Structure formats: structure tokens, C-alpha cells
Image (cartoon, rainbow, N blue to C red; front, side, top):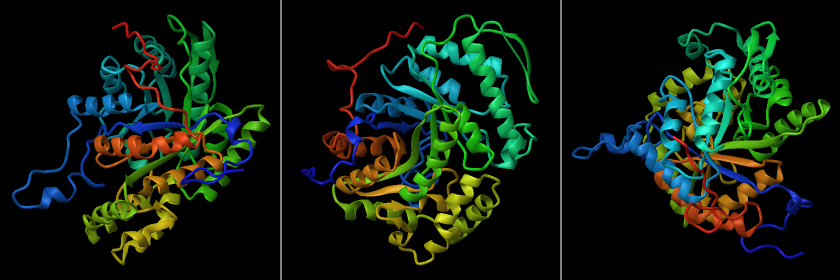
Length: 405
């Protein structure tokens, strides 16, 4: 068996697997040249701030780049500091052609019947380009800010019922339901979505995994080292199999990829140099108090910030090419793929061999990093047979959608 240039021999059965889907991220809380708002340029005398507000014009630039570069979709987050995911993506649907929108929503903040109606409308208006990222929520302060006072495990129970109602409303009309959290009579939509939006779902706790196994089409996890990430998804796979279901698995990561490995690590070092010790301590105080099990696992990767004490970015490399520096000051996904294009492709291949079917990536700034990855790493993944050659609007192989606005 020959080995591909720059890669390893394919694992048994790899050729039969579905090609890896690669998504990008829509920075609806703003963007910049560092991992915190504004980055280093904001502090340099005589230089304009590097912070890019999340205007519709800028978000459209990112979405159009992702569309033209062949990304499958863009994850659009939800939360206090983000612009509303539904409104932003609806506004961008008309200016894009094939790009899908992975819209984050929180059960409990909207009626499941209304969510089913919103999704059905979006699917028709976008030509079938909606995916749903169900975020049960983890930070107690933020949940209470939105008026949600259920405890951690209760929220997952409510999520399961929420998805029961959403799917039931799509599949049967009228649909009635009575559970611990919802009592629904004769729910319906004017027409079911075609196709039904796939459900992406994340959560690391014992309360979350059975919900994923019962309801998710794609289980998402943050980027722990491949062996640890594999162990987690195998638990979900077994739980789903016991219910007669099969899932796909996705991993959420940042990426810093350059022509030379040294240049990528220089960028990671600059990101770290931008952070003051007090900034890291305060961020870790907040992140360490989170009720999210997934967030606690992210904090553990850099030992609560202590691995940053030397000031060297490479000391936060927790697996070859996997950097935990982002999680020093940002919640959620706290790790980044760092290295040359070949090195990043090698690490992605590790995740693929560990059982992952989808990548959800982001970078700083998102516009430029989308090009670095698509032009540097994606051709290598295509050549290795891990991804299929990206379809781009305006090419003979592109699939376009009529958008009936």
C-alpha cells in the first residue's frame, strides 16, 4: 500500500466513509486579529482598532467567502454577545448560493411549535439550506439573563421534549404532546420542511449524552485531543446503537495554518503575547465556575491557565499541532489546529480516523483565515480522499438554489 505524499496510509474502510464535511464560522459578536476583541492593534499608538464590528456588510463578506471557497456551511452562534442567529442568517441567505446555515438555538427560549414553523419557513426561503445547532446552555448566569431558571439536568430533559415536538410537528399534522415541560395541542406547520433540517447537538454531561443519542443527527464536541474526543463519541455511538440509531460526529476547532509551521506558531505566540496575566486570571475565574461539563474539560486542557505561565505558546501544545491557548480567555471551543498546511491536514486526518465526519472551524480574523485553510489545507485533504473536492458557485459542478424571497 502506498502512502500519499505528506500523509499516512488510509485506515481500513476509510474509502467507504462519507467524505469529511468542513464548515466555517460566522463571527456575529465581531472579529479581529487576535483572540480577544480588538487584539494588539487597539493598544498601539497611532493605529486604528483591529476590532471588526459584526455589521451585515462584514458578515456578508465572510459568508460569501465561505460560499465561494466551498465550505459546507457556517455555524452561527447564539448568546448575549452575539447578533441574533435567525435574523443574520435570513439576511445572508439571499446573497449566498449553496452555503448552508448552521443556526444555533436554545430550547426553552422559544415555543417548540414556533421553532418548527421558523425552521420550515427558513428551509423554503433558502432553498433547503438550514441546519439546526441545538444549544441547551451551560452558563447559569447567562441562562438566568434570558429568564431560564431550570437546573442543568432539567434543561436537557426539556431539550429532549422540545425536539420531540419540533420533529413531531414536521412529521404529523396536527401533532399533540404532553410531557413534563410542554403541553401542545394540534400543532402544525403550513407545509413540512423539505428536507427536514438536520439536528446538530453538543453536550458532555451524563444528562446530555442520552439526549444526543436519541435526537441528534450530528453530535458535536469541542476539540480535545483525538484519543479523548474519540472516547467521548464512542459513548454516544453506543447509546445511539442501543436505540437503533446511528449518528455522525463533528468536532469544533479553531485553526491557524500557514505555508510554514514557524509562521503559524508565530501567530499563536502573538495571540498569547496580546493577553495580560490579569486578563487570563479573570477569564479563568469566570470559565472555571461554569456549570458546563464541556467547559470544565476545556479548562482542564491548559490546567486553568497555568500552562501559560512561561509565556511560550508551544507550552500550550497539548497534542502535536493542537494548541489550548484560545481557551485561556474564550469560552466554548478552546483549542486550535496550528502548523503548516501539511501538519494541519495530518491532524485533521487523525480526527477523521478517530471517527469524526464533520469539522466546524474558525480563525482570527475569520475572513482571512477562511482563505488560508481553503487554499492551503483543503486541497491536501481532497488529495488524500478525506474530503471531496469543494463545489463552488459559478462552476460546472456547483449546485445552486433558487431563493424565493
